[in-house]
Each structure stands twice: as structure tokens, then as C-alpha cells.
Length: 312
Image (tube, rainbow, N blue to C red; front, side):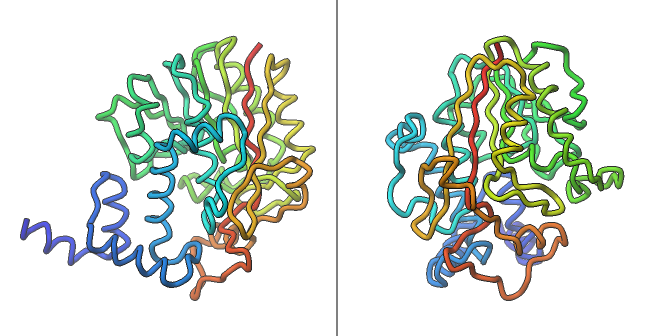
């Protein structure tokens, strides 16, 4: 225990935090201090303690049966839900609420599930899970029997009709954009924003007939933001059409306001703007100091489209 304490004191704080997120262990005193600082400073997105608060919120949300029923039935969320938190706080509960227990073979197209606080949820027990992304990540949960594939979603190395369910959350918008942040391969510094259509065709190809694709993208005013593009109604319709002859299409929209996240319509979300400084910070791999504060405390997207497509 003494040796561990010395090592922790020698490591930079960001390394300690990343290591503990990856393993599922936490440093209680440090975490408590960071959370208190985050709350006392007005819950500013991306400030110290933000990640811890977000993980705690999502962990509680995906274990709350009442809240999950609201997501499953597209009912209004509680006032102030997800205030100051990015769209993951609606994407994950929406997925968990709607994922069928009968789905045994899953593809995570984009590695959005590759976190212990998500994978520990009972929904993902006793399932074959493949995670496909461009390059190895710090998190790796091979002990859970998860298989990792490092390849391009535009050319998935899997046979036809293989998966019961495919999950592609907040990934489609990155296709054909500058993805060098996720890989050392400079060929992924691209300007091919139309390629999301190719991915939709590939996802359909490897999905079993009757299987479901769970898809989400930031939604609102169209914007090309370097590492991704925000979808508008036209692009979203093109993505759905590229899936070809879906037997079911269910569209659910969530909008962020100064009162947190709430169920909405596509029309409600049509003028929503992404927090542009956050997109630039990701592309430059450096956050400004001090952290800018949006008047509504938005963290990233101000609207998200959550789509379930069933292969006919």
C-alpha cells in the first residue's frame, strides 16, 4: 500500500485519473475533492471534476428503472436532467432502455461502449461483443471476453448477416473527417464527409435480418467542424435512406437547454448549434485556460438524434 501511494504521488494527476477510469478503481479523496470543486464552481462543463460527475450521472441513470422507462417510452425527462453535461447522458440511457435482451452478438461500431462503467451494466453480460475502432485505446477489457477489431467502418472485415445488434453512437459524424486524433495514420486526415453513406451500407450488410442498428449523431444546424460534422435533417434522412428498406425506423430527438436535456422534435432541434470552441479544442488537442462558459452551460451538442433501424 505504501509503494502504491508513492507511485500515485509521483504520477501527474491526469495520468492517475486516466488509469483509475480504465481499471474501474477510484481514489476516493481525490475524487471527492474534485467533485466538490466542480459543484462549487457552478458545474462548468470540462472543468475539474466534470468527467467524474458525468460518469456518476450516467452510472446512476442506466440503473434507474423509472428513468429508463421514460427513455424507452419517449416520455419527458425530469427537470434539470443532465444540466451542463454532454449528450452521452442521453445516448447511453436511451441505448440501455431499448436494447433487447435477445441480442446476443453485438458490434460496437466506434468504441463508445469501451468503458468499465458501461460494460459493468447487466445489459452487456453474457453477450458476444466486438468493438471496432481505428486503433488500440488505453481501455481494454479482454478479461470480459471482448474482441477488438482495428479497421475502417467503410470496409468492415466481417461476413454478411452476422450481428444481432449494432451500436453506433456519436461515430457516424466522424466518418471521412480528420480522425488523426484517434490514430497515428495520417491517411485519416480526410475531407470525405459523404462517406457516412458507405458506413450505413456496411452496417446493414453485417446486421442480421430483423436485427437492430442503434445510431446517434449530433443534430441541428449543419456544421463542418474539422473532426466531425453536425447532421441536419437532410443528412440524417440520407443516412436512414442508405440503410435501405428498413422494416422499422424510430427517430427520437433530445434537446439541451438551460434546463438540461429534454425530449423534443426534429423541428425543435433544427436550429441547435454545437459548442464550437469545444470542437476546436478537440481538434487542436488543447483546451483553453480558463474554460469558456456558455450561457446555457452547454457542453457539446445542443441536440442529438437517436435512431433505431431494423433490417428488413
